[in-house]
Each structure stands twice: as C-alpha cells, then as structure tokens.
Length: 427
Image 1 (cartoon, rainbow, N blue to C red):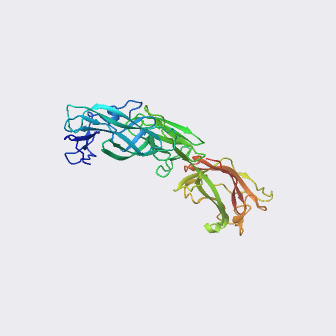
Image 2: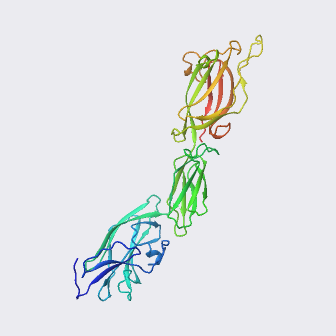
Image 3: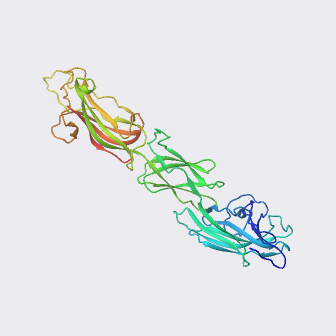
C-alpha cells in the first residue's frame, strides 16, 4: 500500500507489550510497529469506566482472554504518525466485522504514551483503544466470539482479529463424586472426594454451593482459595443437582459448575436353588440369590465393590415339631453375617441348610424340586422353616458399613430359601 505525503514517511503504531505482529511495508512507506507504555506488570482486569491503566494495557493483543461479567477488557490500541516529522496523524477507527453475542465493544482514545519501537522518543501520542465488556447475565454461555479490525481514513488497516472472550471465573474438575455413607471403598474408581479448581489464577475466590435436589457435598476451600474439595454427603436425586459457584472481588458469581453425587442401589435379578449334593453334602440345599449393583441412575457400577449383610432380629421358628419327635427339633442353624467384595454385575447371597449325614436335620430338608427357581415368597404350597430380618449395605465389607441398599426378610423353606419383603430405599 504505497502512499507519499509531502515527501515524508508515516508509521502506524500500536500499544503492545510483547514483540510480535509486526507488519512492515517497504520504506519509504507507512508501517505498523509496536509500542509499550512503560513496562506495566500483568494485573487484574480493570473494572468500571476508566479508559486505560497499566493493568488494562497489559491485556492487549491476547486473542483468547478471560472476561469477567461487567468488567472492561482492553483489546487493541493503535495510532498513525509521521515518521519524518513525528507529528501524529490519526488514531483511526474500528470495524466490528462479527458482532459479539454476549457482550459489547466500545472504543475510546487513550494517551499520551511514548512509542515502544524507539521512534520519536521526545514525542507522545494518543491511541484508539477497543474494549470488550461481557454483559450477558445468563448462566449457560461460556464463550463469546467476535472479529474486529482497525483502519484509518487514508487506507491503512490492521487485523482483522478473531477474538474469543472466555467467561470468567470458571470451575474446572470432575463433575461426579460418590457417597457411601462414610465408607471409601476405592478412591481411584469411586472417589468420595474430588478437587475443583477456579480459573483464572491470581484471584482470591469465594466458593459457594447451591442445592437443587437431595444431593449434597461438603465444600472446603484450600488455603489459597484457588481450589476446593467437594466431599459427597448425600446422594443426588437428579443429575447435577449440586451446583458450585465462585466469585471474586472484581466479579459476580461464575456460571454454575454442577455435580452429581452418585450412590449404590441393589436390583434383584433371580434366585437359583442347588441340591446339597452339588457341594458335597448328602442333605439340604443352597439357594443363590442374585443381585446387580447399580447407581441411582441405573448404571452398573464399573468395578468390584464391597457389600455386607446385617441381621436385625434373631431367628423366628416357623416350623413346630411334633411332640413325639425327640430333640433336637428343629436343629438347623443360621450362619454368621458375611460381607466381602463382589462383582456388581452379579452379587450373590448364598442361603443354605445342609448336614454331613442323613437324619441329622429334623425335619430332613428335601432337595430343591424341579422348577423351584420360579418360586417366590407368595407361591402357594411352600413349607416354611424359619426367618429373620435385616438389610444389605454397599460400600464396606463389615456389617452395618456403607449405604443402605435393601431391607428384607430371609425366609427358609424345606427345600429352598428366598429374600422376602424386599424394600429398596433410595440412597
């Protein structure tokens, strides 16, 4: 773009603090150069209507930048001057090629500042500054893209620049945390505490939680406030019903960062009855009662998980012995409470009665009949022996540890056993 004006040369100069983006046109012609208004350190985004400060100017020419709501961010600053006489020519104008959707662009004249390229050290100049302000108060958008360029009436231009405003502050980290009612079965797979980080750095953050369901977390900021720990306190009733916000001294709250507190539940699948002879005993049976362990949103848990049974009553005898039958009658026993780590896709409770010799158990339990797997607690014709009440919990191997996943009655019959009165409370 050649242009001579009364035998002198002209420079187009920008306010900037790093060397780069130099667009030179052969001498004797106009050129773009760079400028520094002193050497300000990087600082916070300036709020309010001040046209420019060192902190504001330090942000220039960052095409992807953190934008706080209702806080001015400096974008570009340019001027044109006569390289021969050092006289100012024009601060130019801006064209917004693509309009922002979440904020506004404004311009103002700033100065006077010295030229950072060393030209005309005895002169100072005004510059045309473009500024951005995120004004959308909505809580969904995270980015705002727009394009602008600078130009003068005599045909010089700089840009266009594709700018991206990134809404700040924002929270980064995992959006799921587990709750096992105090248990920590496997933090690698089932984290019961997660670390959240606020961005950008360099600010003092205030953390806050907003509950929109049954889910809850204990939110504890770290000493620097740049991060916080969220520990599950209660299971979510809907996805992302625990929302976290951060705010700073220069901004309102961030867009909400919403978490889900996951917890285990049980799903009964089926029962399968096995003769005692299958496991080396001549008398009795074993009933294997199968479950799947899911979270409250119906997803199978990803890795093995501990569970346990807790008996809340003693054994109640349902069978009355004939007075003519000599003691002991009846003489079957209940096993101890058990727990352990199970496959969540097939967690099995083994309920059995067996003896090492015929005639020991009275009445002698029969082997499961053909088709007994289809029997339920309400099927007619079953002969009850005994029962007791209790619950199953998930998250720990010891009785009473973890989240309550089922209350039930263990019911034993002469040739099989079942879980009856099953209630699966929400976690």
